[in-house]
Image (cartoon, rainbow, N blue to C red; front, side, top):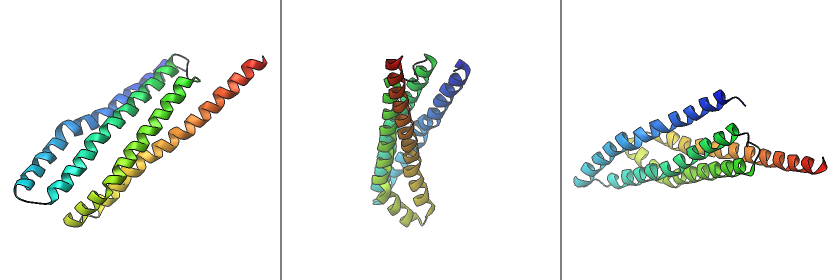
Amino acid sequence: MKKGSTLFLKVAVILIGLPVLALCLFVLPQIAAEANEAAERGSDMAFVVYALLMVMYVSAIPFYFALYQSFKLLTHIDRNQAFSDLSVIALKNIKKSAITISGMYLVAMPCVYILAEVDDAPGLIIIGMGMIFAPLVVAVFAAVLQRLLKEAIDYKEENDLIV
């Protein structure tokens, strides 16, 4: 495979991580500050916001781990090691990270529901569902690729033994 296409994908992986980093560094602390002010005024909703902020911050860890594994997978492709157990492991880690993110937002859905009820914003529930199903799609895709890659490796090893 040409290095240019994997270089493009590596740059894309980095660019995918930048908005989440900006969100964690700039937007979420502002929301936390507003939640602090609401808590000082005696609002019970501040604790719901704290729970959602915690889920958002903690879910960044498996997100960046999955991006790192994607970068490693692209490096294996560059080194002509695409059909190796290292690639299968990277896909397995991506799948586990995506399932973890999806599970975190699934657990946080009651908080999203409470916030949507108080603010009378049913669109928040749809956004929350999107935060569950988008990583789930990535997990299914990684699982399919993992299984296909493992079968290809097994087939290649079987053919190597015949020749």
